[in-house]
Length: 422
Image 1 (tube, rainbow, N blue to C red):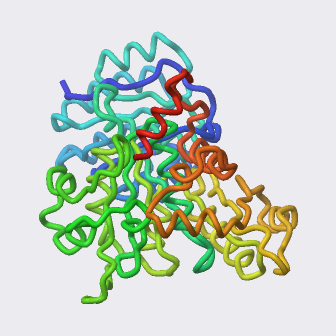
Image 2: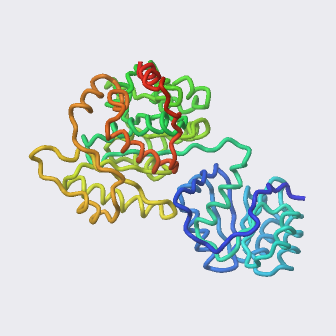
Image 3: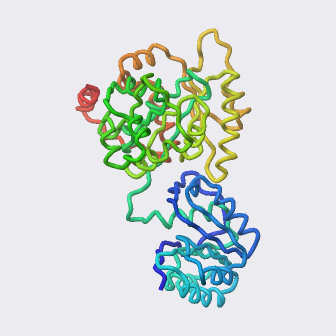
């Protein structure tokens, strides 16, 4: 009998777009072969193979269904995952029994069928089928089914990567990303890490008042050493829930990277941290594009002027086209209300982007400048400042958490807050 994993749902509705807050963990480097009977299913599988979450999987599609699969594996080894489309009930069960005689142990099978019947489902489970997906299927159904094969419920959840990038240099994207990460760790009580990807000029170390001897550069330039223990040694502890993977911020070397230079770092962080916030520098290269497209959620920080509007629109269009099965990126307006500066109104910005900003953060140089110079977050300087609530709104939207985990207030709360600040 084939050693199939048994992780499936009893009944599934027709193909539909994913829920807004759905988080599907990426699949590892596996081989997937699909045997389809209809061109519609083949097209859906093909589109699924272009999804970022199956970016490491090697996908091959053939027509012919069950009969083609049995013939193909008479003399060839089976892949990690076989996706089979079948219309008939009798042929399906008999074909699976025949397929078991030519399959390698450990291969997992996903069946796409048109019979919505619990009895059939139970028979499939008894035969060791990993998942049964009701046709017609969409790309996200295929992505979900394959990825879930490698995300066992008892396994540690794969971390969510949040990428923050500025639409233009100097718009405060790093400041926003650091304060949002602070809100994720403090107000949402999620373990989080900030990865400063601006190796030459990164400011995360300054903003969190940290000066670690090691950081992300040690990982990028030693990819063969990257594992969980090595990354843990590079992390700098900021708070109980927040860590920093700092940039060296030195110019003693040139930081030219290949497209996949950060892949091993991100994969390791996913395995150890529930939330990873990427502070991406304002530059356009193979690795920055890959980091943005590969992130689970994206925040674009823009100032209310024409250049920012154009760049935000370009980023939106690219990311939506490259991530058709993900929710679109979010954006916020920053430095709104600079005295005597002509600005594009938030309503006009939203009309051009066809999306509303998450928040519009006002221009307040006094408190933001003090925080930057003191190596503090806004919440540490002024616990009741209005921008703190905006950072929390962004954090909630990016993480999918709508409720904060705050302790009930008491007479000792002011004293506790002062001690926490120290």
